[in-house]
Image 1 (cartoon, one colour):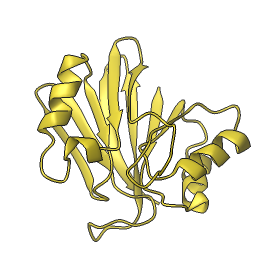
Image 2 (tube, rainbow, N blue to C red; image 1 turned 90 degrees about the vertical axis):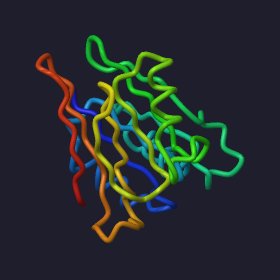
Image 3 (cartoon, rainbow, N blue to C red; image 1 turned 90 degrees about the horizontal axis):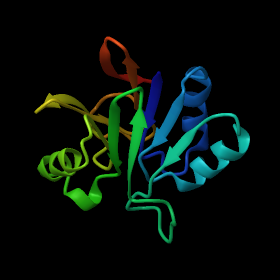
Image 4 (cartoon, rainbow, N blue to C red; image 1 turned 135 degrees about the horizontal axis):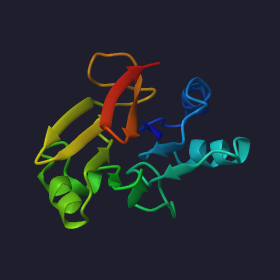
Length: 159
């Protein structure tokens, strides 16, 4: 199963559509926030795809969820959040606590516009960066997660 993760598109439908078309065989697409309008348009234009979309700090008056727990594969769970409510600019400890409380082995967060991939206490931790406005000196990016019978593989990719 392939999961594509993007975040912080801030109005750029072109950026998110480029990711969806490049990864058209993915099983799940997750947008971690600050892109509600783009998510709505993706769902409309690609009704056969599975999209999970979260509310970011710039998605004003949004009814999207602020966090989700998403089962993937036969025995894995993702804890996904934009991250601003968990102080991710300073620490990921709150996210780790929430993931552990909910028996999740993958954490996804955005908000910082910095790519991050780590592994701590048996939990994969991924920030795909921003698909339009990166702040880490790298090109715009997104992440992918491959969940297989042999394990989990994660990576970020530039557009």
